Image 1 (cartoon, helix red, strand yellow):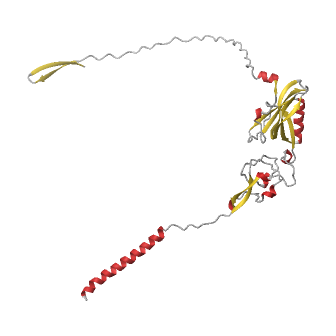
Image 2 (tube, rainbow, N blue to C red; image 1 turned 60 degrees about the vertical axis):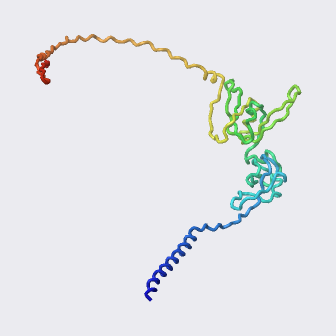
Amino acid sequence: MGKWKGIIPIVVALLIAAGGSLFLYRWLQVKTKPPEVVKVEAKAVPVAVAAVNIPWGTKLKGNMIKKMPYLSESLPTGYSSDGDKLQGRVVIATLRQNEPITEVKLAPTSVAVGGVSAIITPGKRAIAVKGDKVIGLSGFILPGNFVDVLVTWTDPRTKTEVTKTVLERIPVLATGTEIEEDDKGDTAPVDVYTLEVTPEQAEKLALAATRGTIQFALRNVTDTEAVLTRGATISGTLDSFRAPESSPTPAPKAVKKQPKVRRSPKVVRKTTTPPKPKKRFFTVEIIQGDKLSKQEFVM
């Protein structure tokens, strides 16, 4: 019986240690276990997109439309999944390849004819102006740009030539070239620029094109500042390169002579310097071992 009394505590301790180890092992497994990945199947929705680059004013056809899958969470506003319903619609904004064809970039269903008339802003007009490569900045003026219109003509009030900015920030709808016959019967290409203007601006532009010479000034698409100018004349332009006239030097003013003032003679005060102290001489005897020497000093 005495032997069992010593073995029982050891067995109990081993059981407790084994149970604790097992509990710790399972707890570590739970903590270090990677999180379960929940697989969510994303639902794809077909969206009609442009199969090629489509310029504005184009009437959509079947070969211009294709479908691409879009996630249901990222569907574009105004999209369409039926490409057949989009055939015959007129595009009022340029579409790039693979760009969704949304309702905001299409003309109303009542518009069945493409071209410039489909993209004109309600209340405005499209007017064409003849020009050349110089007016069009050698081809840098493209549809979608904004230009200022300058006109050069003879002012009937002063009978002088003047150049003035008459229209600002006019959108360019289209540019093209047409063949025109001159007075001699020869044909030559003529550049034509179609601008979007209000009725009042259309009247000014038509008058400027018929009575004077017009010029376009290309401006930044983000520049909305209105600039008022007085116009440029020949005399004013030449004066801007003229050196300023030198003003005549004024004549020297006569200087009044001041009356002489008699001053009292200066009194010179003599200062006495204190006498210098007298020099004092003294002698010091220096004994080095068995030798004796004398050294004189002055104070």
